[in-house]
Image (cartoon, rainbow, N blue to C red; front, side):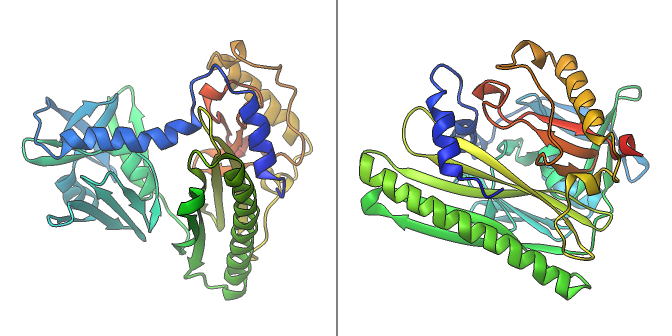
Length: 362
């Protein structure tokens, strides 16, 4: 976990010459967001349909629209059906959605999207017939809900996830040097609200130390690169995603994106899974319930998913299986193993995730 990110990314960038940049897509998504919002701020008419929903077990029908192959739901309906608080700031031209210990702010003109103070990327809102519509799955999954489509009833089922009683705020390390065209921002989660304050402090200290170490290493590397180039902006951003906050465990990953020139940058993903009762960082062996066959179970599942997604036809090198200390994280559906950029697949495929239900290890 303490591997030199800059060295890894530099090696990966040397291999990237004729592929579509995925990590840059994260940066470009902000540009797409801005471009789309140029239209979002001006009212545009879209065709809406009545979609069947099941919310908290109750059946209902809601007017939605589809764009970008994504279902969008009306902003006001979040108040009526889910009890989320929404606020429209006319002066700042922002929409704020609050609930379940989260605050999501969408800038309709700035193109900025913030979750609990951290910049994230996502699809833009749509304004149609004087109503604001937001991407349903992207929005609700970040607000603590599970979204499932029932192909038999053709209904979208929404249920609130039973999460741990913990509040997650944002910590940030930032450094900029306009003369050297250098920009660094590393975000990390700060926990509060746990009953076990010792465990809470242990986790917070660990995550802060990790962020500080990686920011310091990144700054040193960027300064070296900036002095060599002087032509373009070099940057390092660290953004975290909380992927699981249930059953006394907290799992998250930090994506460190580095750009030092060329067609695109590179991303290194660093995951963490904690036991909230002790503050201990959990190993793969512990999460898979000490199952002696855990590695073979995971390898079999990954091979099956590679074939099902037809990814086996695009492998740069044959998948040779994971090791017992393989990085992982959890999500609502199970254990997640991911492929790093260029590890097995071309850059354009991004970081493919493979989910193995935890019951597989029982």
